[in-house]
Length: 279
Image (cartoon, rainbow, N blue to C red):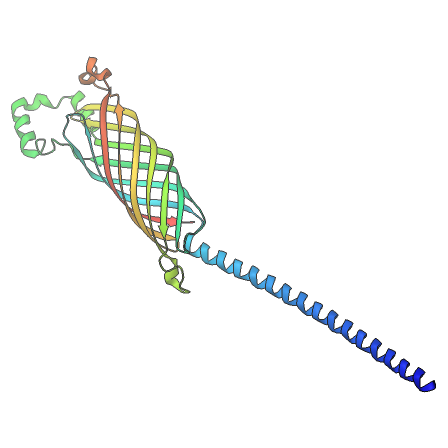
């Protein structure tokens, strides 16, 4: 009987020890699993942060500032086309992009907050008003041609020019980063194409031979272009075109007549070369 009791006690003690060991192992496994889960979460968060940083390097923040040179021309109704001597423009906006497609393509919307363009044009009659033609006129008119009034008006001659101010332009933008999968500087190289509609106010000034004419108008302008970007700097080219109905305002009796009340349709066409900075 005594042996039976001792054997039972040994069996019970063994069972208790096995249960305690199993409980200890289970607790250890739970703690190990929790630690692994925490490590996995940290790794995922770190991966997301790296992906966001890489996307920021490739696609930037979206804000841009363009500075460029404009090759412009303009014409009104049946009048000769005027080509620019020079032109400049400044544009500022933001690109709002949707999530990446296939890891390398982004579609977005451009908001052009401000666009200012200045162009100085050649007169289509510039050759006729060259030195030889002027000399003949002076010979015909004699010394009386240069009276005081004409001298004053002549000093105001600034030629032909236009200023166009646009705001709240909008349009689609498609960008491709073909080397986004690489882990080097090439991953930050991307190409973009875009199309914009730009409402604008334009002012056309003509001041020649003592005659001054100023004509304002609302214009519908359109841009289509492309650019190559590396990190925060882009080089691009775009075409711009549009038109408006201008109402001439004359500052000389030559322009104060019934015809001056009529609106004239003036068209613009520009090729714009620019450098853009992202920030």
